[in-house]
Length: 142
Image 1: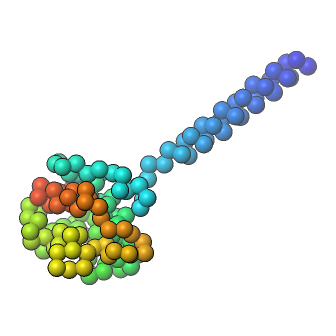
Image 2 (image 1 turned 90 degrees about the horizontal axis):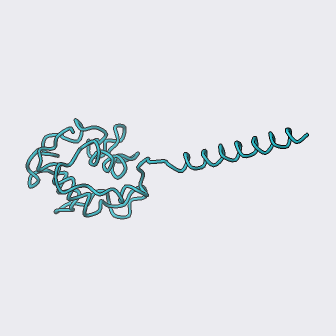
Image 3 (image 1 turned 180 degrees about the vertical axis):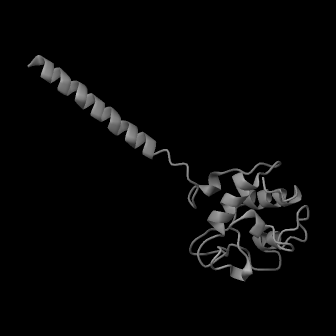
């Protein structure tokens, strides 16, 4: 009888441990989304497109009705590096003539994403500067 009680206690502890592990693992979601993209800090140099720029563009700009592959607002999609680096929109090494910079800074045009957009907030200063640095560094697919 004592052995059954001990086995039940061990089984109960194992079940509790498994439940704790499930809770801990499920809480470790590192997916970037609108609520946590602003916490990502883009460095001042050696800006990686895949690590920093694409996630920002995907979350802030590539939403349905905007610059996704289906909607292509302004005939422009930001779903891949090759789409983003459209000549004229992004001129590698030159932020002064890159329309993307004009749009994200609101230089003589409506700022993108629009203030008050239902699905996104405007880019923060670090994101704008990060995109500009990436373009200055050659807009590489890195």
